[in-house]
Amino acid sequence: MLPLTARELHTALWSAADEMRRVMSADVYKDYLLGLVFYKALSDKMLVEAYDLLNDEKPESLDAAQIAYTEALTDGSWGDLSQELNNRFGCVIHPKRTFTAFYNQINGRTFMLSELRQAFRDIEAASGGIYEGLFEDFDIDSKDLGKTPDKRNEMISSVIKALAHIDFNDYPEDALGDAYEYLIAQFASESGKKAGEFYTPQAVSQIIARIVTEGQNTKYGFTVYDPAMGSGSLLLQIRNQIKNDESTGVDNKKAIHFFGQELKNQTYNLARMNMMLHRVPGTNQHLRNGDTLDADWPTDEPTNFDAVVMNPPYSQKYDARESLLADPRFAPYKKLPPASKADFAFLLHGFYHLKETGTMGIVLPHGVLFRGGAEGTIRETLLRNGNIYAVIGLPSGIFFSTGIPTCIVILKKNNPDRSVFFVDASKEFRKEGPRNYLDPEHIDQIVDAVLKREDVEKFAHLATFEEIQGNDFNLNIPRYIDNSEEEEAIDIESTFFELTKLGQQEAEVDSQLSKLFKELGICFDEKVTA
View 1 (spheres, rainbow, N blue to C red):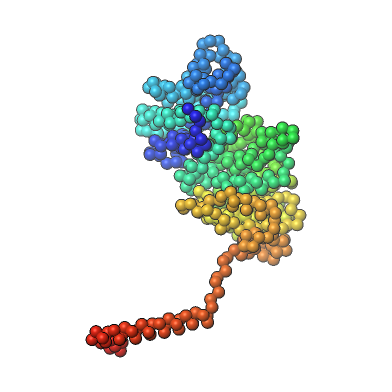
View 2 (tube, rainbow, N blue to C red):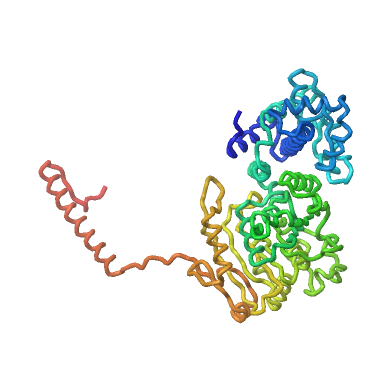
């Protein structure tokens, strides 16, 4: 059977959760589907690698690979085979616990959820710790799956059966990773506001990634940091902007080091799976489950990065304790962001970890551009230091988590003329249903404008420091770009002429009606009253 096209693969993966979709919400069943997709991908790759090691060729099918893999247990080749698989994958799946074996057990009515649990435990316990705690949120005893063990077994079996016909070895690494990203986006769409915790729309990620990598030296191990990484989609977008060195054959994409932190354990594990399915080497993943604002991280080398990217939760409360004023992330600004709005706290944390030659892109609500108090003081300090490089106003309705308009703030540590480039892209979108979308032409228009830093009527403006100072360091975009539509001028003389003409026409009609009524013997007298 021919491999599915990318679109067919996406549809097949999404359809695998049809049974779950009937009884639970997307934010619940996503952990089960994504966990099983990840496990199948790992299992399929391991089966084919094992067959190749045993026979020096690729198998005709996963079933053929499963047979050879099972026979290795008894023919004396298991010891060397398992050691080599562990070297390549960081773990070894027992032959009776591969995804293919589970599918065969379901058909033979011998499948037990306890074996799936054990398979997860074996992987998590593998040496090196890369898989530690990866399946913590896959609760096979959850009543969401069914009220009884048999019902839960039946539910998981339905998903395994729906995925079984897909061989992930038929697809290149990027295709499988993109399919996983597609699923994450679909869950975000169904989950609504809850999705803001783990997904940044790809169009926004592309804008940020293209800007922060522009002009950077990517040959010797580019480093990127996301202190609120969610599913890691914004981090991974950086790979698409890094070009390989054709003259030397160096794969610059494989040299990227990803640093990320995420507060929620569930989302942290999702990011780890996302990295693995995009085949990011374990040595290049530096991910942490923790509270970004509570305690600074990373504090070991490296602590500063070529790029910082972020889409933090908007206007979140945080512990604005006085001791943070001595924290080097916040100390230069003399004041802390208000406890009810952590927007600038996230910005300052990320900016602190930016290299002198680096670029940072962060998505925030428009309030950071004009709110006063401590935020106004922080904004003024950043502007006086020339750190705010560009402000991009995005359309409303492009995020799953909020319908409000947002902006991307671009920061640098080396902007000596202290100018700020403004883009008003609030009208650059395609509407589809209740949401708005940025298409490739919109993305190109925004990125090209930022890179050129030239005025475009009703769309972009390069504001000097003196202009910004004259606006009391208020960065509200309408102060710098007027994108309002001009009202059509009204010709008063022509309008009165038309009104007079209409009056004359009305009088003529009344006169004609009066004559007709008289001919019919009907009195037509407007002056008669009841």
